[in-house]
Amino acid sequence: MEYEDQINQAIDPKYECLLFDVDDTLYSLASGLSKEVTKNIQEYMIKKLGIEEEKVPELCISLYKHYGTTMAGLKAVGYNFDYDDFHGFVHGRLPYTMLKPDPVLRNLLLSLPVRKVIFTNADKNHAARVLNRLGLEDCFEEIIGFETLNPTNKDNSSANGFITNTGVFDIGNYSGHPDSELELPSTPVVCKPFEKAFEQVFEIANINPQKTLFFDDSIRNLQTGKSMGLHTVWVGTSHRTEGVDYALGSIHNIWEALPELWEADEKAENIRYSGKVSVETTVRA
Image (cartoon, rainbow, N blue to C red; front, side, top):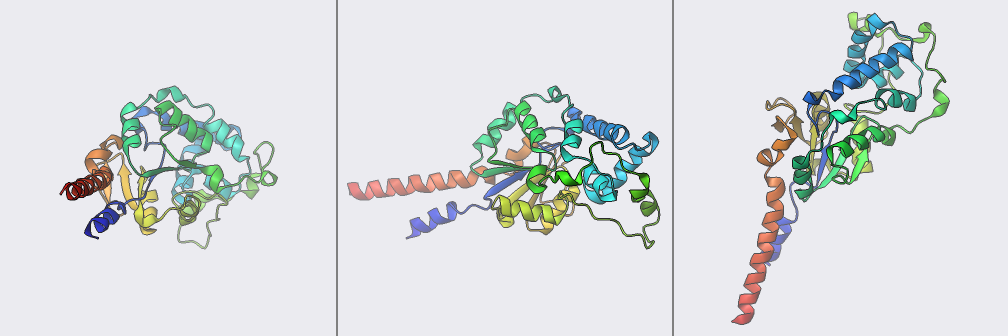
């Protein structure tokens, strides 16, 4: 009975799932790919949505601050465009050769005896291309991306993206007068860092947040995750803050920071081996 109790404890690990962001989490910000994403987003805003070039950088910051992603913010304030067109322009033209295969991370992930799921605000094609470049395409059970949480409704998208300026909410005016009676419009886009995105991910991937480690480079995403019961890992810094359980300067530090992810499996094996030896000794006696 004691042996069975030990086995049950060992096979009931602290974590049942590892939930990973992609960009600037599975690869370093220093790669430069994120700068290319930002450049493409701003170019899309200028060329496809007709926004004045000098207003774009500040607008990007405001939309990201209030809505989690620039795309979500653009939709919220009134710009009408096709999601696939946006992703094709922003991600479809990226120089993915900036990313190199990462055999160290691959070996770490494959050695982890825990479910691994991707949770990204990006489209699945982008996530897949990043994983392929890094050599991690077979390391994850599932990719939960933009399309998973936002089934496309073509009827709500215009052909060229342009709409009249009179239909656009002035978020600059809102940001300059946050105490005014202006009400920030909601976005139809479901994405991090908002709770609805996490709730859907928990349901889609059958995740118990109390037994899940969430890896992300965004403190806002992590703080929302923490408030919803997830254990959190801030990737890209070694400094912990509120809402963060672990902080990794690099995703490669996962073994040093979280050895228990491997120890649980080793403990179970040791108990099984110990039990086998005990049984064999008893039989010989």
